[in-house]
Length: 235
Image 1 (cartoon, rainbow, N blue to C red):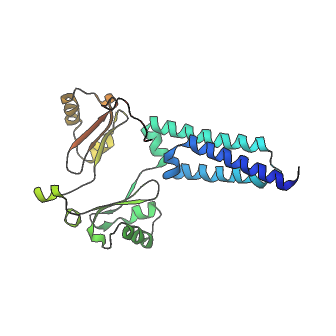
Image 2 (cartoon, helix red, strand yellow):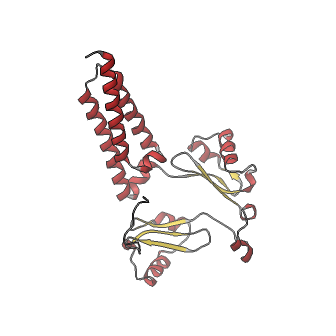
Image 3 (cartoon, rainbow, N blue to C red):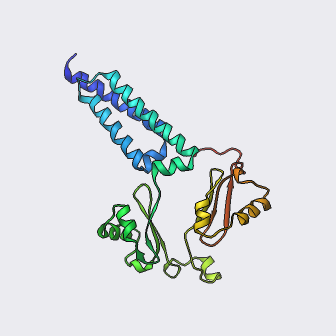
């Protein structure tokens, strides 16, 4: 077999296993990569590239290495799904870089952002004046989300009917059935109050998948057992 023919066959094989691997890795890994996803994507890309044209690398060795990286990605995703602490360690936490119109320099250094990058990302969110920003948060995938101060937000029908309220960030209280004690303490929320709210709904914290206080001080609770009996993907 000539080298050209072998490269063509290996390239088709590399494309096929890459397509299969992408299906196993899931939509989140493809759409929004965190640090771990980035590392795995780079490694998988290098493996498939070598499989295509590096004739000194045996095909079954490349497939084995590819399978290991896909398996590691699936395993870490499963661990992250089951453990809040593991999820924080693997993917990191969002970082607040602007609070109430003030740039937080320490957090900027922590997120490895400079002023030029920050201003560019703010302009992409149609923000040209930092004083308009209530919170700007760098997410774990490197993107920035912005919450404007109430007086600079777009007006909705609800705003016309209601007085202006002072907004703040939502506070997560329960994730994966576990109470986030740190968030309760930092926001001066009594655990007794949370327990009473759960009792009103005939719930225990282990029944709750996610609980959060919104920016308007409304408690949102999502249980493991919800009303969607037959959820399915769009066809």
